[in-house]
Structure formats: structure tokens, C-alpha cells
Length: 304
Ligand code: FDA
Image (cartoon, rainbow, N blue to C red):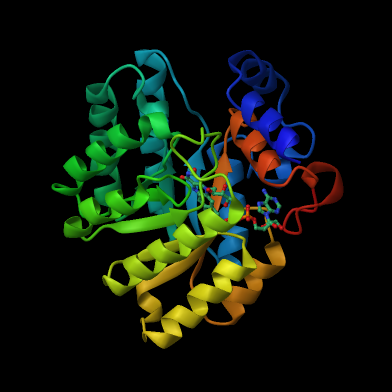
């Protein structure tokens, strides 16, 4: 299983395959995880989720952009997405990857593009989360986040439980009262920077969930792991954390029954909804998490 996981994670960064995949459209069951090729298709999916009481954070797929024109075009696309979402009365946020906005070209370019996005989001009252990518970009991402947090209220980022540096990052971020999405971590990392044993990752995950909730900051617990979900439920009961201070987040297309069950139990549930033609890297990471996927499951929302 580990070998298969590594193969999928290796493929997720292959630029040539990404280009080919873009040309040929969704394949091998990718539509289970991806809400369409364009904004119009994605909005239809978001509306159907909204009718089920599920909130969303929308991701316009794309990452590891290596030229300025493409980075600026992505920012334009995100501004358009924000304007479209602003016209609908949906509980919709957006998620962005700094490498899609030019982080690998320069911090300044990514920062400039982020400011355009945040200005548009501010006008529409839309919250923006900066996704966390691989560990090489973690420091830069947090630097940009803390800088922007000084000027923008509705911005959050992601912390990955598998990184050794995470506990230290949590202490550094605490004075900013950040809204954080806490995850296990989805990239292929070396044992020099990250835990690889499930138990160690889960233990760290539980620690940062408790820490952030007890510090009184908004916490998105983004996982499909029943044990972590159960742990969080017990924690919020024990410390009387108000339901308005946290939410569960799951990926569109994963554990659909669980999403609805949590919602029925009264928890806020937000789905991460990606769309766009640049689907390959995202899909490979989902396969790495659960390689049996594509041939076994259908998306209960769309039937695809
Ligand atoms: P774990 O991998 O232990 O899975 C628990 C159980 O869930 C599995 O046994 C399986 O049954 C089921 N499951 C998990 N993944 C599945 C899949 N793809 N298909 C079907 N079943 C599956 N990572 C990151 O590095 N940066 C980020 O910004 C984000 N953002 C993000 C947002 C949201 C809303 C979620 C839910 C996740 C992320 N992630 C992420 C991904 C995260 O780091 C992690 O890789 C996945 O969530 C899988 O880990 P779990 O916590 O679900 O546990």
C-alpha cells in the first residue's frame, strides 16, 4: 500500500502527465472528486450541496505555476469566481494555492495576486483560506499569511499534523488569533521533516486540535478519520466549546454519508469542492490517500 501511495504522490507532480490529463478531460473516476470543468458547472454542484445544508470552500484547480502570465491569469479567474459566488446566497468560501499564484517565481508575485483576490473577497464578504502545499513552501506560505493577516480579517490557512515543525508554528501563529484548517498532510515528505507513522501523525493532530480550540480560535477539523472526528466531539463537550467556534471539513466525494450524518447531528460541515481542468495532481493525491477508490465508488451526489 505504501508503494502504491508513493507512486500516486510521485505522479501528482508530473508536469507532462498534468498537461496530457488537461487535454483529455476527466478520466478514471476523477469526476467523483471534482465538481466540473468550469465555474458554471461548479456552481450547480455547490447549489445542490447547499440544499443539503452543506457549506463549501471552492478550489479552482491549479498548482506549481512557473510563469507570471499564468499566475496572473489564475488570479483573474479567482476574482471572477469570487464575483460569481458573491451573486449567489450560498455559504461559500474559497481556497487558494500560492504556487498557482506564482510563489515559485517570487514571493512578491504571489503576494500581489493574493491582495487582488482578498480585495475582491472583502467586497463580497467571502473568506479565503490559503491551502498548505509541500514542506518546501511551508515557511513562505506562513510568512505571506501572517503579513496579509495584518490587513485582512477574512483569511485563514492550513496546518499539517505530519510536520515536525507544526507545534512551533502553532505557537508563532497564536498571537494572530488565526482561523486554521487542521489536516494530517497530503504530500510526500521525507522522514527528516515529517512523521510517517499513522499513530504519530494522529497524536500530533489531536494535540493541535485541542490546543487551537482551547486557545479560543476558529478551528476547521478537516478529516475523514472517524477516530479524530469522535475525539473532537468529546473534546468540545468536555471543554464546552461553542459549535460556532469550529466546523468539520471533508472533501467533496469522500465519505458522503458521514458528511450528511454530521450535519444531521447539528455540526457545521464544509466541503472542499475543487473544479477546473487542472485535475491531475489533486486526483493523484486523493488516490494516494485511498488507492482502491476509482474503481469501487460512485459519487452519491452526482451518480458519476
Ligand atoms: P486518513 O487518511 O487516515 O483517512 C481516514 C479514512 O478516511 C480512511 O481510512 C478512508 O476510509 C477515508 N478516506 C481518506 N481519504 C479518502 C479518499 N481520498 N477517498 C475515500 N476515502 C478516503 N492536505 C494538505 O496537505 N494541505 C491542505 O491544504 C489540505 N486541505 C484539505 C482540506 C480538506 C477539507 C480536507 C478534508 C483535507 C485536506 N487536506 C489537505 C488533505 C489531508 O491532509 C489528508 O491528506 C486527507 O484528508 C486524508 O487524511 P484523513 O484525515 O482523512 O485521514
